[in-house]
Image (cartoon, rainbow, N blue to C red; front, side, top):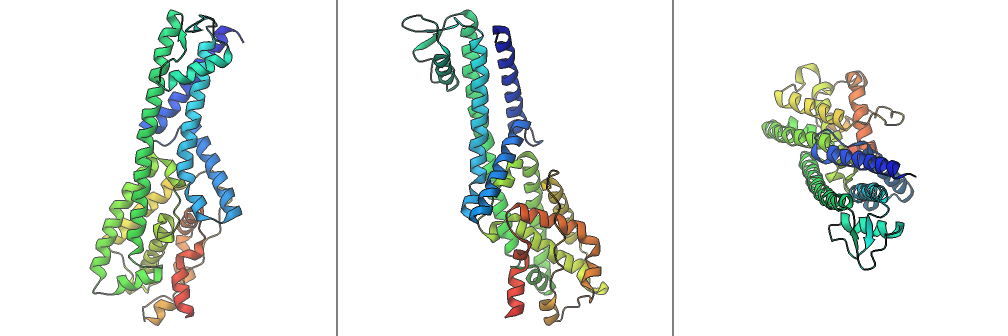
Length: 340
């Protein structure tokens, strides 16, 4: 390859990588193309590992692994790009002692030391152009490390925020039916709506974080109480029962309920992946035996009441499956209580 082509290809690689880095870390519009490919690869690998092992702890390392993988790919691409650039100047890097031009392996070593900003070691730039390029490469390495750290910190904070919100929702009830019963209790209805307003505010924050950092989807939770997808599924089913599953004169249509439903819809839109494989079937209608036993005025035909919510519940099903759970966990406690 001629020196001109090496310089052209190397510069192109550097531009592509740095655009991806800036797109991913400095904008609020998701990830760059390289980051999306790496994220998809980690997602696929983690899903395969989980399918084979069934281990939630192994699945939980997907997020940190993706950060390491993305940083590694960025670094390797920069390393390769700068190697091509320096290779365009065969006599530009020399041994500091013998003044002999560096061979390929020695240029690899020189570029690595330069990007790490640790110094040029026992090789040095000989030409005016390579001296300037060495300074640019060192600055490029420093910028990459800084941006990677600034990208990782909010990711961890966002994962903590999601866990906190999931736990807050779990305090409303361990299943949709329990949430409905608590909301139906007139002594606690105002407290229930106040809790919905707080959940709504926190979910808006999580939704915006997800838009800026799609990698948050890979921070899987080990436990149901800290899984935002599962807890949103339970909460939304409870709200569906309150607004659709009760007799018309008893349906709950307060501002707090309408507001949280809209916020959940926005969150589902943000997290939905356009490349998702074959769509799942709509989940089963929630059981109402426990509610009937407590004399709540539920409608007899729940299938008809939930008909218009099919697409929404399908999105919730996709969200729960994307987090590695099955829909059955949404009503696990309710079914256990009904059978006891």
